[in-house]
Image (cartoon, rainbow over all chains, first blue to last red; front, top):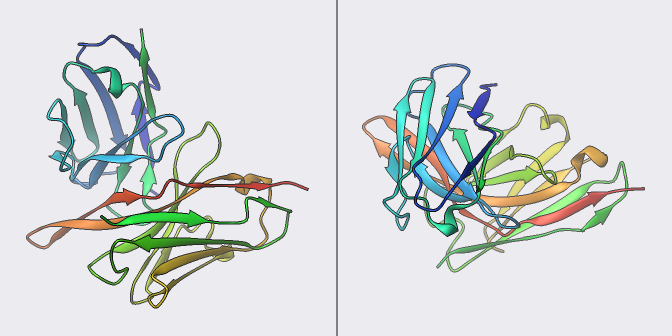
Length: 107
Length: 126
């Protein structure tokens, strides 16, 4: 299985901050990388697919980059509704695997 | 728009067989190129991909769970299902169903989960 790691595990930030979350795969996965946002008590929601393509309806302050083994999710100008947990997921092969998550909380 | 809704037993005893159903509303389960997927999440933990099924019946299972799983699709009822036998406390989790679709670039297919159900809590306890 491809192992996914994320850093940091928790990130404390303020509204208006620029936030960066890193995801790393245990082997090269090209750009087969998705990002999801999960708010407390809710199902995850898709933010970005194929490493950098923004899902329809997702605000443009979210962006993704990277390829191979190293990927980044950036939130420009953090908004109150962005406090949540973020997961990366590889779609390179089966079983699809998720990173352990990065919780973005209020500083 | 298309919505997914999980249904399940809630509380189970160890060694029983878990049966979950995901009902698809607002669209046909066979109305496109989708893999219908199950994911679970123990309380306070991360997401685990359980497996997926295409409307043709083709399946992919997580090898860590494969020996206990059966997935199926019922196009007449517009739902898909998961059966997991011999559950233990370690199977206690919120179970989500989701739709996987893809973006095609040349010969590359980038699959992603674009639609999720709200999840159903399954607790295994004696």
